Length: 96
Image (cartoon, rainbow, N blue to C red; front, side, top):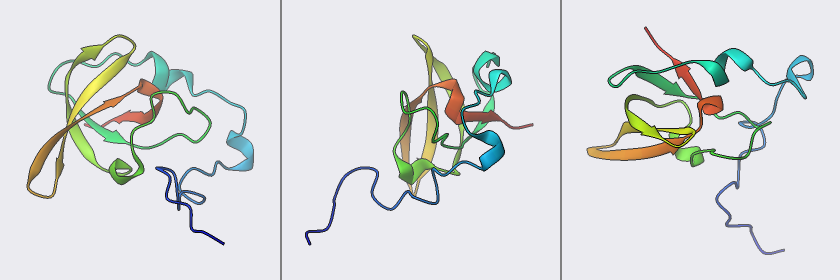
């Protein structure tokens, strides 16, 4: 069988939700207002597919640059390169 080479390959455990979390929307993560320069962690939510960043950024931390529509633009360091990630608030968690 030919191996799948999609953008979500190998994400079975990463995007899995616990039984108690299924079919629930975390409203506090959606309603949280960020300011420019806030530190956030990118944690993918398997229950929400819209605005989900690529799986390589799962677990990374970055800084909020600005808002773009409903989503936020996050500056993330990927190796030695600075990258921008567009993610909706369901996939972001604030850090102190």
